[in-house]
Length: 450
Figure 1 (cartoon, one colour):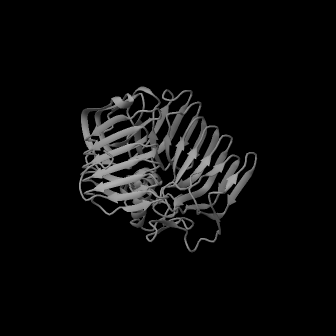
Figure 2: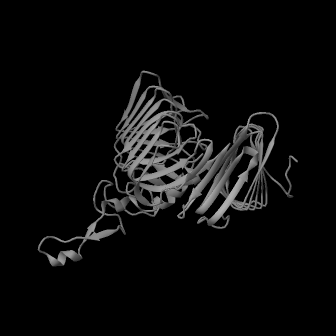
């Protein structure tokens, strides 16, 4: 699933660095280049030529957090050395450090108030919340050694309440939060880059120009998800099995969105919020048609098989490996009979694709623009040819072969039996070999395990 997706944290560092100083995020003064509208005072004809600043324009820059970073004295600062963020040296708040062992037990309440909280894990494990975690007037900095090393997980009966606070990655590694079945989440003026996921039955609210960035999983049910005045919304929508026709909301617009018929007994109600991006996913027994997404979207495809016997899947020509602006398809269909799934585009622009593979699946991809293809578990295998890739990950005994492709950011090999093999790889990606996993550079083309 997403992250942020598409290495958004890394991209934001360079974007934030380009943003100059300005006003407090709650000020009505516009950011540089903000849109203005004419106004006139009674009895003053000259004032018809004077502009009135649009207070919403400060949120509409490509630099998602520039209304905050560099403008609020308690906002974190760009740290070029770590490719992430750090606290301002002038921030007077008390600093504390926690790791993956931090937890809140059921029935307990723990509060961070007016603090800088650095999450520095020692091993790959998650922070589990079963009681109530309250974060007020604080800054959280996720300081991990690998992608998603320590997630924040709000479990059944758990509550997460965030007020006037922010959370950012302290380096280039992805920061993920999971809102699980039976949890309750409340954002009130929360600003940050974590990528979240909503699964099962969740009560979620966000108000007062909060950051709303998460995956809406296919297993959502009996949920209420209400968002008002979000300064940015980036959704990844995963419909449940079945046939679905969807037109995502337009990007870079303040608008409303209400969905009541996609997940069982669930309402998604978004009001007056800035839609930065809405992406779509397909999976087992899902047939998805996207209509009139002309300003572009990203697409995920999940495929897995836990029963014995491999299945073979193949995808070609997904987007343009030479351009992130995507391809506008008048009508195009990709079939994956291996998992009884298909995606059809009508008058829609596909930008990038990510694939998540697990179990007894072999996937072959060519000539595509890929965000972060991953093997999560089992002995799945993947071949990638003539494509552009932002990052690759494989775990357990998963194996990936990459030929004549560009890898931009990172290759992560996570477990003793996991392997990534590369021939003709371009780019200068960081290579993370964790827990005995190996990246092997080949001198000749050919899939090693065949």
